[in-house]
Amino acid sequence: MTSIMPGAEPFGFEGAGSETGVLLVHGFTGSPQSLRPWGEHLAAQGWTVICPRLPGHGTTFKDLASTNGDDWYGEAEMALVGLAERCSSVFVCALSMGGTIALDLAARHPERVAGLTVVNGSVYSEDPRARLAPILGKLPFAVKGIASDIADPAQHELGYTRVPLRAAAALLAYQDAVKQKLRLIRAPLLLFGSRQDHVVPPGNTSYIAEHVASSDIEVVWLERSYHVATLDYDAPVIFERSAEFIAKRAADRP
Image (cartoon, rainbow, N blue to C red; front, top):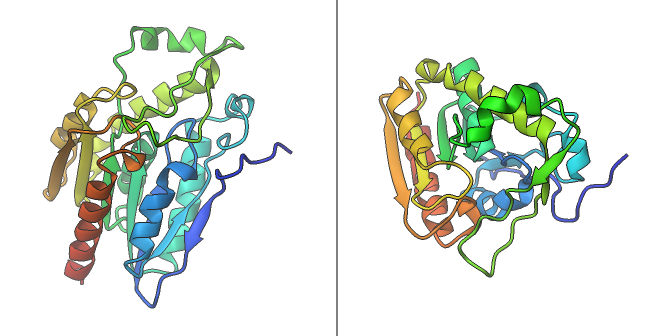
């Protein structure tokens, strides 16, 4: 069994008598490490917080090659169902591919997801190589990683330096599948988008906002952060605004 990188472990915090739960979902090739400060802030509000480690992540990039969207979604779904059994209101907060998974959860489990906070979520790619994904995904090679796209030089994301082509192709297929489900999403939605993102085209944030069926949508643009905004200069904005968003929607639920 491949060992987990120190710091990449899943984490959780038990709420202090609150009926509100928060599921955190990390991004592609990343790990729970990128969301831990966010999780600690939300837990400080008295809420139950959990952040699973998605299959193939937090170990070695070779493990990622044998996983796909069903595996990543399945782990998050299991965590959502478990959290919903303990909390009357469950919110999903996510980064990058985690946002794709969060949207999928909201589409498939409208009764369990009380609201979503998505940071630099992705449902499409502008990489010209994407159209070759079905072919490239069959090749046993890896390309340069996408981890640690952060403006703040003092911060670092714990992620892979290489990405298996097979996993990249699986991600593109999963994103496309979720893109087709956006019209099914009616949960309140708080979207954060970095103006400068070297991993996910910022247009994804606008696309999501324009294509979901939610009537309660907030979009916040981040001016000082790159892709991994949860570890970047605008992290306090994300933490504070998401806590306010959750507190208000939890209070409004019957």
